[in-house]
Image 1 (cartoon, rainbow, N blue to C red):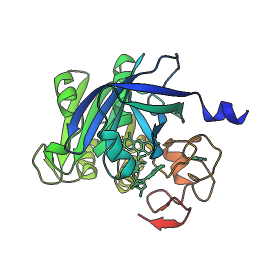
Image 2 (image 1 turned 45 degrees about the horizontal axis):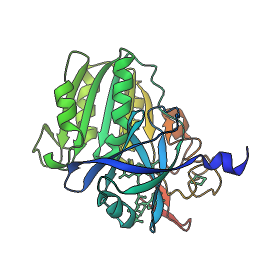
Image 3 (image 1 turned 90 degrees about the vertical axis):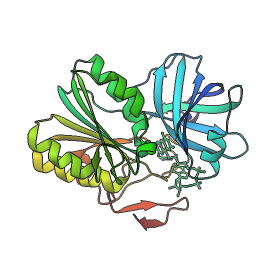
Image 4 (image 1 turned 180 degrees about the horizontal axis):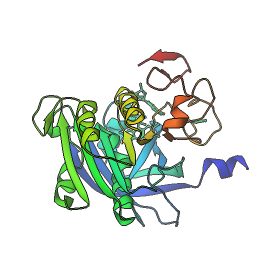
Length: 273
Ligand SMILES: Cc1cc2nc3c(=O)[nH]c(=O)nc-3n(C[C@H](O)[C@H](O)[C@H](O)COP(=O)(O)OP(=O)(O)OC[C@H]3O[C@@H](n4cnc5c(N)ncnc54)[C@H](O)[C@@H]3O)c2cc1C
Ligand code: FES
């Protein structure tokens, strides 16, 4: 494939709405005019003029209205959450392998801003007729992302559970502790997750022990987002998170010795989590 095709179509988009999800997290909505297909779990490379281009999961896809949900942790994300309706940003994509939604009874576990790619997944699973238990985890009640939205959707098909480290909402403790209790009483087909990698590594162990399918969306440092630069390679297979992921199955993750242990920084140095 030609390099310009790999890089994806670039579009300048104008922000139409900004919704505050928590103190440090906002969802930015904009219209993408060219018709593109999207599957839950894919991401965009988002250009913040004058600052950087960074990967962001698509948290809303209702063409032409697209949303990204940004947690402020540094220069680019600070600039993004400071945007207001009318401001311009640039986007390329969507990129990456999505979640496989073939599932009857799903357990979906989102930690912090990891809820971003899981939000469209939950809607796709509901459309496909799956039963869903959604566990939203955060340090404290005010950091629970999309809690109100899914609280209002709570129904026969969707059970909402929360865990917080400080017990301010739902189960007091880690998501892994809540999931251990859940899988003891319910037989799920697949555990879908996105969030801190140590949480996902713990969940993979629980899913393997309980004989449940596992799909996790990973984050690695990304420069191109489309398989050109190699920044997001995982050891020892060389799988690229931008191209072969970001969603990996439990079987694929078993072969990735980096998962839950190491990541590479912007210059490629290996660092422990
Ligand atoms: C596939 C994917 C989907 C993501 N989805 C979301 C999302 O929906 N919402 C969200 O808030 N964040 C998401 N992230 C993380 C987001 O890209 C980083 O938080 C952001 O790039 C930080 O940039 P910064 O300039 O604000 O912070 P910096 O101060 O530059 O960096 C802080 C930390 O962010 C990470 N980071 C920095 N630049 C990059 C980069 N180019 N690629 C990957 N990680 C980087 C590094 O771990 C770094 O230590 C996603 C990352 C990936 C790989
Ligand atoms: S970000 Fe360049 S190869 Fe993945």
